[in-house]
Amino acid sequence: MVKTVCCNLILVCVAQGLMGCQQEPAKTDAMLFRETTIAKAQVPLDKALGLLTPEVRNLPMANLDTLIVVNQGLRDARHVYKNNNITHYQDNKLTELDEVISALEPELVTQAKTLLNQTIDRTIELRKQIEEAKNQPYSARGNDTAQLVEFLGKQYNQDVKDCCLTQLSQIDQLLKSKTKEHRELIILIRSINQELAKVIKQKGYDVALKNQIQASQ
Image (tube, rainbow, N blue to C red; front, side, top):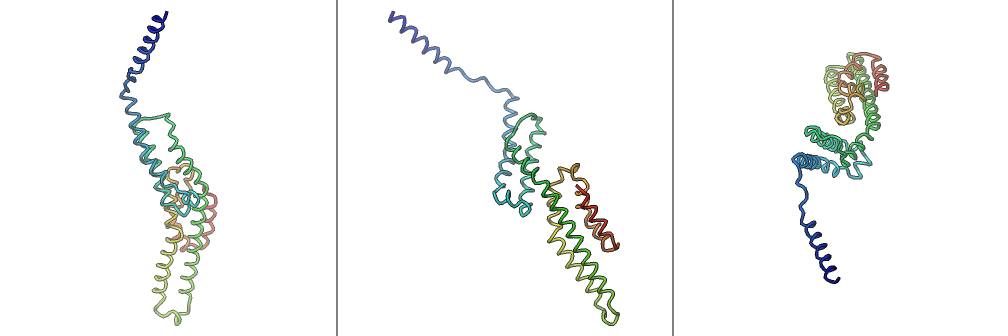
C-alpha cells in the first residue's frame, strides 16, 4: 500500500515536471507583426501624453503650440495602425488623446470667432485712422500723409499678427482634421487677410463679415 502511494506521488511529480517543461506555442509572423506595430505606435503616444501636463490641460488656449505637437503624435500613431492594417485594436493611450483633442473643439471654435472679430475691429480702427489722415486740410497734411499711412499699416500688421493671426493659424492646425465639421470657419481663418482687405476698401463689409463668422461652425 505504501509502495503504491509512493509510486503515485512520483507519477504526479513527473507529470507536473513535464508540464512545466512544455514550451509555449511559438508566435506566428502575424502575431509578431501586430506586436511590433503596437510597440511602434506607443512611441508618439507616449511622447504626446508626456506633454499633457496639468498646465496644458487647464490652460489649453495658452498652450496651443504644445497641443499641436500632441495632436501630431495622435495622428502619427493612427497612421502607424492604418499603414500596417491593424484594425479593431483598442489602444487606451490613443483613446485618451483623442478624447482630450475632441473635448477642445468647442473652445477652439469660440476662440477662433473671438479672434476673427478682433481682427475686424482693429481693421476698422485702421480705416478710420487712414481716413482721418487723408481728410486733413492740405496745409495741415504737408508731405507726411503717405509716411503716416505707411506707419499705421506696419503697426496694424504687427498688432493683428500678435493679437490674433498667430493663434488663428494654430487653431487651424488643430481643426484641420475636422474640415467637414468646421468647413466654413476654417475657410474664414485661411482667407482672413483677403477679407480684411475688403473691410478696408468697402464700407459696411465688416458687418457682413461678422455675420458670416457668427453663422460659421
